[in-house]
Image (cartoon, rainbow, N blue to C red; front, side, top):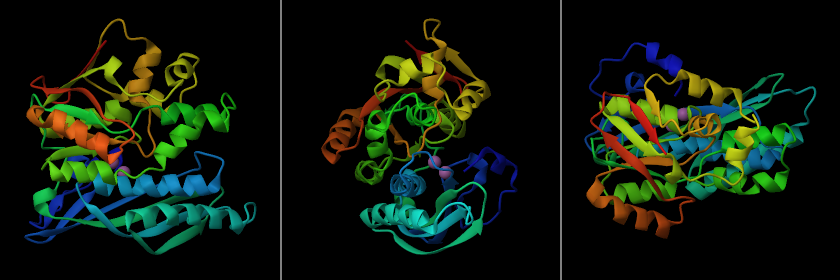
Length: 323
Ligand code: CO
Ligand code: CO
């Protein structure tokens, strides 16, 4: 959910388990003692040229917020903005087909949607999922000392910007496209098996922004080690050449309390702040479970299984990045 939502009034109702106040990934509404609904919405402009890949990535990205809460998606509604006069509807058909493939993998039904005429194409989904309140993972349940584990490499914002600027070819982003298309379901399954309580996913605000939000909501600080971050090939070099999306730049300028090791370059700082699409889960794990969780993530085939740092008792929301 976006930053503007923090100005929403918080509904005072015992059925509201998670709402905008903690800027979590999705809203959670209790139906009974053992069932809650998870609701989230996400959409964006094309990030790759292939319409089918764009649809697939947008679907995986929308579903990710349900997984980040420990939930399972049930059904989704398509959201479409389309320039009907300039872009053939066959291309929209490809977008919807790509989304349909990923939704099927997730066992999530697409049951409807809405489209508007729009000069710039946009696609995404509203997703309804369910979670047992006992399995709920929020961004507010981290503790000092917990391990921070990331399940996908970073750099999709920089890579897709490089593609748009013709600095790299389709082949150079193929691995990132493959990973953005992948569901965060295996990571959520491992989290559930280990009874994890705290998680988020890494999307538009980058690792830096989403970790800072989690740290603030959990009343803790966080310390991560730059060399332990999993990165797609070529990302740091592209950032050093100034191939950086506007959102990434804003993410870096927008964080309040971050301490950078003096040896970390501007490019490396931008990588930590890079705006991600369909990024991995950031799992908060009691340190005694960290090795087992990493092994289970590896067995489940997540694109990365990286222990990148620890939560700390530094002032809430403070991030330290060491070299
Ligand atoms: Co979201
Ligand atoms: Co999210």
